[in-house]
Amino acid sequence: MNVIEIKSVFFKYQNASVPTINNVSFNVKEGTYSVLAGLNGSGKSTLSKIIAGLIAPEKGEVVFPLNSKVGIIFQSPKDQIICGTVSRDTSFGPQNLGLSSGEVEMRTIESLNSTNMLSYAKHPSMALSLGQTQKVAFSGIIAMHPDILILDEPTRGIDVGAKYEIYTIIAELAKQGKSIVMISSEMPELLGMSDRIMVMCEGRVTGFVD
Image (cartoon, rainbow, N blue to C red; front, side, top):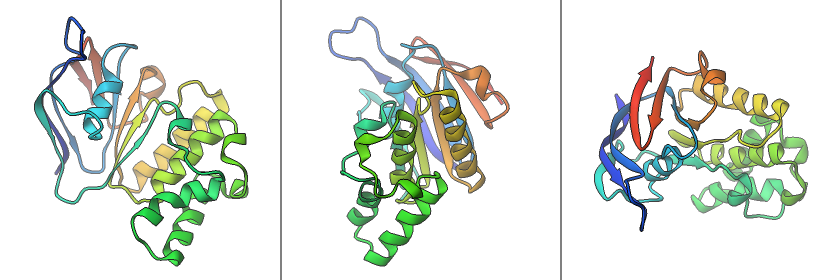
């Protein structure tokens, strides 16, 4: 079953001379780990925001199954950290889903444990390294139990050790059956780690590696 259907999507920023996204179509199957790879400026991040519903396409559509829950991780993890401590930030999403306090606490502990950040639960959110901050961003999204994850360059700017910790987290989510679309300019590192790589160039998807 397809969990994402992208149908003839176009998008052009105001005052741009050419479309950033130019007639892009592809499907993502349930439970697969897909990578959208390409050079900087190829349109990957814009497409990730369109898929996540943060930007509306000018033409075309993005279709999900009814009641699908979609989570997104941004390039800059500090952009999605909103609370003063690690535990409060992780619990923010489940609280806003209207879950019971017991369920919120359980999800917070489980999510922080899955990212190896439980020992930092009481730490100030803004006193962490970039890699740790990205793991907290993952914790907050994981705690909401999304069906689909859109990951926009989640390892950009972090050191090698933290990068492979993030890759490990993503691989575990894939094993759990999450449907993942990862945006990345690091295609050689991702060969063999994903089910499918889609190559993007100048606003178009120009090839697939299965």
